[in-house]
Image (cartoon, rainbow, N blue to C red; front, top):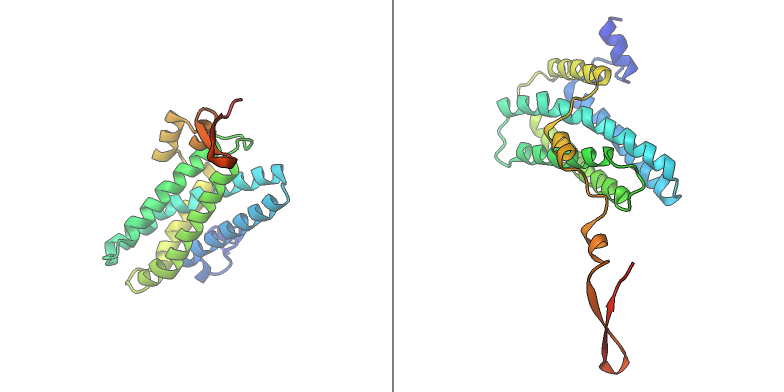
Length: 212
């Protein structure tokens, strides 16, 4: 085996076919699905520390495929694939939203009231993204003349570099770092100050202000 083959085997890519670009991305998708399932199982049993570990791992694992797709895979498709339905534009925006949520989660301690909900939204969005990629984008891409084995080698090389050196901060991470993250949702914050009229028997109403 060559050194590249050894590194690929360490990443779970045991055959040349598995290093083909779409197979490589599907393997990343499978890993993310498993992490989302683990989160849901931990959420049901209220395993707080395990939840934090899973969220941290999922954020790390999300950043690598998002980076290599945006840097290599999507640009290759834009060069050679007709995209009248705007699948690539939608995929880019879904990456943008996911990166913002990842950056916010990485700034949180895990004890905030909106921490778990934020990750659940991220998981739901990424699952939708994966479904569209595998169900629509990948089949359309496979109809092009792109050499996906050659592209896969480039993706793998970039992936190995990112795993070794880390994913550099992207525009979304810099934006969240500059403006910060809300650790409490607007509705939680506003419930402390608004007055709401409550109906009583006989049609009378009384005003109730939530005080803390």
